Image (cartoon, rainbow, N blue to C red; front, side, top):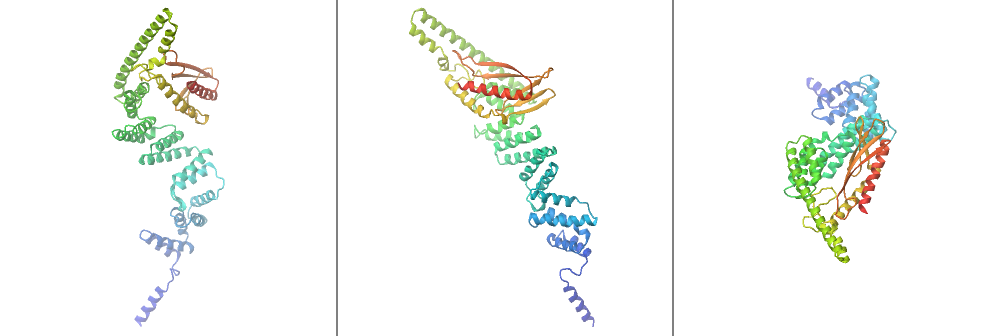
Length: 449
């Protein structure tokens, strides 16, 4: 008898099909006990508990379809919305999850969303909800749409994504992409300062490249400089002053050393003073050579004219020109940068300036020109060429800008380097933007004549 009762009990237990005789609470308890060990099976019990009407199962099941997303995105959204709605109706939980599922569904259907709603969708895409793959690229599109629709908090998130992109590009040693993302970061954050670590790593990459590749090191070093790395400014400044592996440009080199000093790099001040002294000595010497050659050539011309030798005078005049000076070994120093110590023949110098002018003209476009306010009465107008001019608002409400230009404008008989300051006055910032761009274009066109 006892054996028969035991057999009946055992058969009854084995005959329970998939827990149908268990209550919703009992199925929920099985979910709790199994979710750490067998999560997939645990959630099957959770869904059975929810379908059996156990209200405590609705919220975690909605979160399961939102966060884990084992089905298609569309089905995950549908089920999450269903169980969040049940949770809301039962009063167990608020409707945050329900609203999130509805919003994500609207986004997937292409419905019109507000700026704030675009921001929330971007956050969900960044987190990889409802079975979607985590994607900063997709999130970026939605953050940018939120920014376009006036949600200012999106700008910070956009800048952080571009910072991540710059980090990833740096790991791949794709320096152009690093700088593109850094510039995008600056566009939204208005500063390179948070990228200080990336700038330093670019400088270190340049240091590692230098012994093996005397050309490739320049790019990461220049990008580090653009991000404001004082050590990189010092290193690049010394390279320009020395001119060993990059074209010598002492004006640019000294400017970089001075900037490095202002940013607090300890060695920059002493090096600047040494380089500046050498530069001034070279400039003075070059000017002395030019004046002496001019005196001798003038004397030759006068002697020829005095002797009545017209043909000889004409030949002497030609020889006294720039071509004669450019052929002097170490002779007249001329370059696009305005440096007075880089000695090049006139023809080569002209070709170099024209090539640079053509490159700059291609960048003189209105869509590349940016206006940024730097202080109460000061704005910076950045041209696509990389040049930036400071515009000051005066007491009368007008605007003023001083522009220093250095380089070849018109070479006279003896190749005098032209340098001048233009004082511009404008009625508005828009006029300043347009006129400065026009002056820049006219400047390069004149160099091409």
